[in-house]
Amino acid sequence: MMKDKVIVSSIQRFSLHDGPGIRTTIFFKGCNLKCPWCSNPENINFNIQEYFDGNERKYYGYEISLSDLEKEILKDKIYYENGGGVTFSGGDGLLPFKKIEPLLQKLQKEKINICVETSLVVSDELVNIAIKYVDTFIVDLKIIDEKNAYKINTNVSLYKKNIEKLFSNNCNVIFRIPLVPDYTYTVDNVSKILNFLKKYKPQLVQIFKLHRLGEKKYESLNMKMPEFKEITLEEINKLKEKIEILGIKVEYCQI
Ligand code: SF4
Image (cartoon, rainbow, N blue to C red; front, side):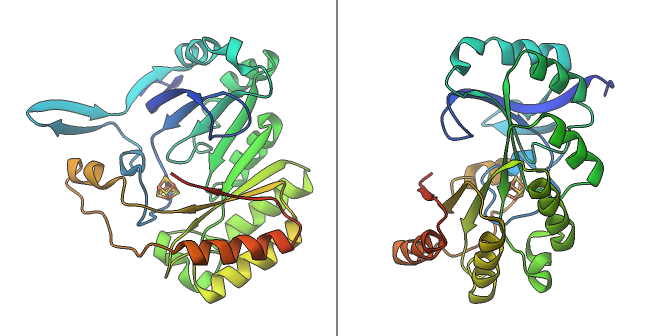
């Protein structure tokens, strides 16, 4: 792949759930984690992947140059008033940041609001680049208990180090917590999450219930979607209350 090209799986326009205002969301391919509930399994692998839709050969992902990506983003500039802008997602939206830094510079010059959705299990170098350009970080808060980190292939100490860096640089951070029994929703992990939130007091926490929406995509990739339990509404409300008691705004997002 050429130096100024990236692999995108899709571009979603008029998105209302990926940060403030109306946004254009760029989904990059590639993620370091392996969450069993992932509803976008086609974005985990970093490369373009072939699949069949009936007899038709199709592909997850395509190459796009940074200048074409810039054009795609600026097409929607008129809708970015009232705080809207571009959101880099994935996969992990932060992973291509070294490559897209020239694009980030241009967008910043054009005063386009920039959000990134990330697991934050990324290198120091990428975090340093992101801090220069990103207006709002939408960060996953999943397993922060070292002994269970293997369940989703995360790196808790790297994650915590990166979070510390964002908050010490006064970055805007929204935490997203997927609630999955036996993974993120265990007595131990929930108590660690509450302590974490108490320490950092983010501007917003979004909590989610996970469904098996990605099942068809797993099949198209000849993969089986892993099993996981669904959380109950009662459990969601209980946790929502516990976060609110900390004085933190929390939203239950239904997807
Ligand atoms: S971090 Fe997100 S994209 Fe990556 S595996 Fe987990 S749910 Fe999927």
